[in-house]
Length: 196
Image (cartoon, rainbow, N blue to C red; front, side, top):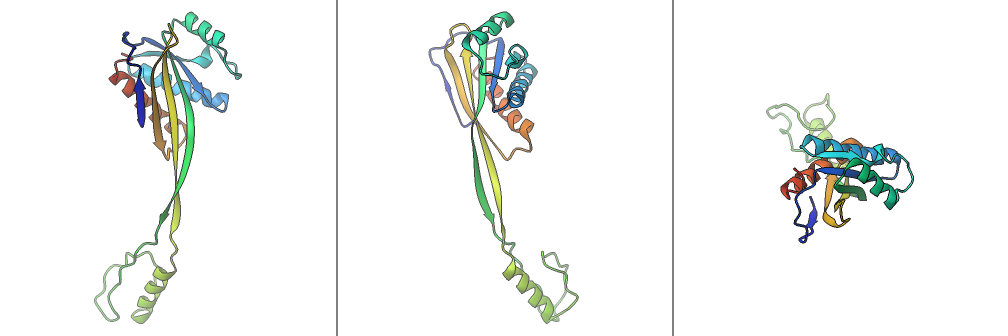
């Protein structure tokens, strides 16, 4: 977790049944967020359900719809998660430094350098290694950081109880991206004794 906050005025016991709302750019993303958080919560001993199972519409949910779904499902807390930002940074990877080999006529050793295999010996081997080192250009690697905000509210009062910002860097795919975030959030909520 990058940063967290807990409402110091909230002294009630933790939440038993969470209504999970994911805010994404598509309905598919919303379901992925909600299903992943619900799965991680249940695996850790809590009760949770994604909002899409009760409110499947792709349009913006109204306060009345959310309250109605929470009441019908017996939820005592609302967990909302959304993607805040995506940052990309480039890192320059310099060319691999080539270590000089034995001089012409010197003792031989395995050629582990990233250079072309040369059929020549002596002066050409030295020239080939020097040429490749001089002309290798290096490359750029892109690191992508996803930052999420997750908020926990009391179902009874609507009061904000907790929020946390989390990051994941270079995830393999969308499931990996939200999965690592959900696990970090659930660990934090358990540590704060806000869920069983």
